[in-house]
Length: 300
Length: 277
Image (cartoon, rainbow over all chains, first blue to last red; front, side, top):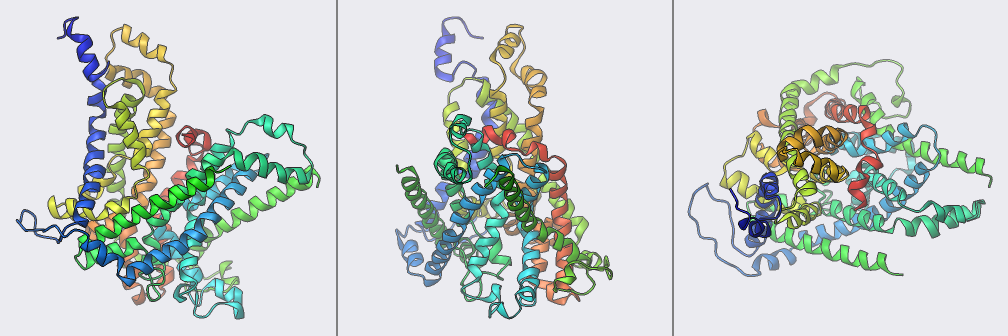
């Protein structure tokens, strides 16, 4: 099909094994349809007066500039939800990094029953949020086991209906649920810290702590960056927990997340344009936080 | 501190931690078997009065078998598409040279950090409003069809195979599909299991997307029907927590069992090449 003279030209155009394109085509098409196009559509919707219409109906959706963004940013509910996510991140991200690293480091040494321990830590990660929320509801309801253990020390109003405690409790729930995945990332990273660095250090108790700070922590810094970014994204995606655990972001919107608002405004109330604007603002926020974290973690 | 004391301390830390991780699972099972919700500490260690009544109750409100079938179809569809197209894409990315290879690789990494929830509105518009796929299994599967992490795992494993193997097969005149099927695939079988495990927990546990596309209870996967029960009708059951927890056990059991059985495939070294970057 190809003469010797056309072959190099074709190879320059399509690569040495153009069959690779055919192999990768379904996946490339999938990414285009499910990520690239919706990403563009999200931005487009956020700049237009967009509403749902019957399939095939011709409707006008005029360009409205920044009007949706104005509406979103001046909406106290939206502001509160972004504040809630900040509370979430301030608790969840540091807790995740510290617990995951300490547990991974402990798990990385000589440990009896490692398989059992690993399964225990990964189990919440592989289990559906909906199922786990069921148990937490039972544990933290006003007459639940946590309060019956705490007795007179239990908070009033109880955890899930307490404006100050609802969001922190969700942050702890998500830390617990996701920790196994982050332990896994740290375990992989720990394999890459050169053994010699440990061996050259002394082995008495005080030196061990020093060693953790001066060898382990810097050694896994790229993994820490990944953990921080992924935990931030998980936090920005928060939906199931406020929807089910605190009965739709309650009390009084104290645990509403932006994605929950996107659902309520976009789909329940039929304003996809404002919902899309919330989404775009959310992503810009995540990008900014990731950049700042990167700067902070890359220093020195 | 002696090294022995340190070892004891390390084990103490790890086992106390494991207890905090396992207790809610234990409590889920106990709570699902209690006749009356008993939230006292002794109630967590019952000596009698256990019943399967809660499972009967939840099955009355939520069609457990039907929901499990829907979860199975959703998850199965995603697994099928991921294994079929993911292997092809992973092989092309790892072992073939073609135009656009670098771009697709970058795109594959990029989509793993795009928050899916941002896309929920446009994807909802496309799937439900434009293509009219609300209340269909296809609409449920579509946005999850090919798991990018699995594609990445496939690529990493194909990349580790020696190039001579492929050169020799090509000199013998074998086509790429033959090489992929007969030579490369048998060598990366462990990757297949790892990728299947990673992919499985996505759709099986997913709540938001199937919740948006399925309003028809007959099509809802268990995560959605259980969540609806939790937020709507729990008040009507005689022991709402017991019924919720019974549903939770049914939802959690398949993923947990699969994972415990194959936990060796879910280790740092198996996924390591994936997260080392």
